[in-house]
Image (cartoon, rainbow, N blue to C red; front, top):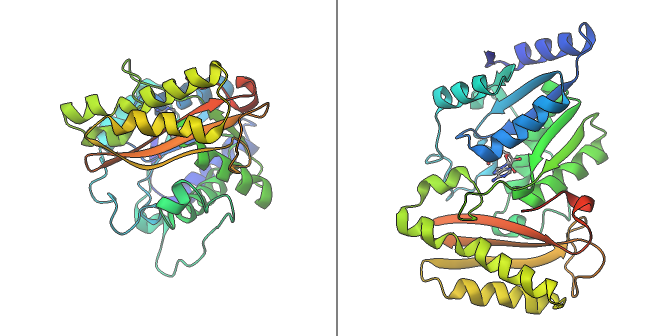
Length: 292
Ligand code: AMP
């Protein structure tokens, strides 16, 4: 496994793999602090592609001024050990200056889709995400890039960008990996103390309750959202940012969940830590990827 810090080196390695060796490249972008969620993406990349490239880059442009960019967990030594165990071929771990050198002034914005949900709670977040993913896709030029359903809106926004800008990369979205408690794995779970970790299970408990109601015939979006809200309201350490039900492809708000898959998503503060989670309702799981 080679750890690469420079864009130029990453580009020439990837070019050689593609052109001279004719090998397919699978790419998994991450911000490090790796957990089983990331590893599930790497596992799938390993199964589908000849060569696996993982990027580890805490991207400053996707954090708001009062968010946790400085506090975000960083441990490249630990991450590299895990990536070597998973037979990753290349780790791309650039510095901030390598991605955003002096004079950098080009940003990628996906309109519309990024106005709601995470986009409205975190202004500028998706501009940072799409800009860095565009740069990374241009550097690595992978055949496949792997993303998690955990960040449901992010996957939709990236698919839109890839289609609109004509990137020659297939986007693969994989299911949410959870702890036994149901808590979705996240690098930010490291911020939670024991009581908060217990409280954080209210996210999946509330989503599961809504899904059970859906399965019993409640298809009105506002009532399903209300089930989630009232369930979270019982947890004193939790404060809702948003609960929303949207079409799983267009992210349009919907009134009823019928044949088309819908994503029931939420963002909740547990103490000071902001967590997100979602489940898919309606349609068949195959239409949008399975969801635990
Ligand atoms: P991050 O390092 O948080 O930027 O995440 C990198 C990738 O891993 C993104 O595509 C995430 O959606 C994905 N990911 C994060 N947590 C999980 C999880 N619990 N299950 C599946 N994928 C995940």
